[in-house]
Length: 133
Image (cartoon, rainbow, N blue to C red; front, top):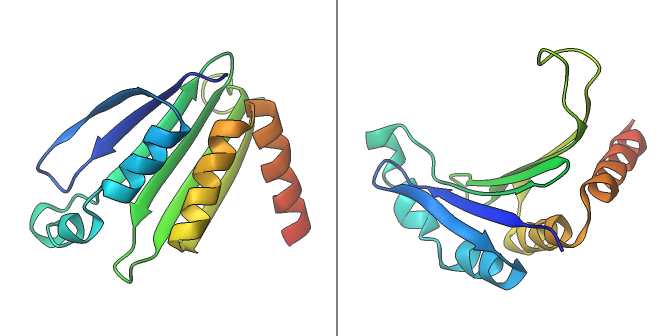
């Protein structure tokens, strides 16, 4: 089982770690986060609320969830099999950005993030990217 760490950033009011979380706690954090209230503070603070999860095991993987003003979400997922040398060379990383995700899609991507190992997530994202071309 992957060790997942959760983190939350609000629109300038608080920021903090959720500690180590499982799938149920991650989904609950997403469901209970006051997205609309936090979005109302963005203009004043300049900070968008974000819910993040990281699996810093042998390889790294991350998922960041940020609300859009229309009620949808931006989901950024990254699976790193090999970090880049000097941050630029010979890395092996897969990225997925989902711009207008609904609540159900966010739940599915959180579930996928928790259930797949980094190399499986990497392969899935790479295949999705190839299929889009």
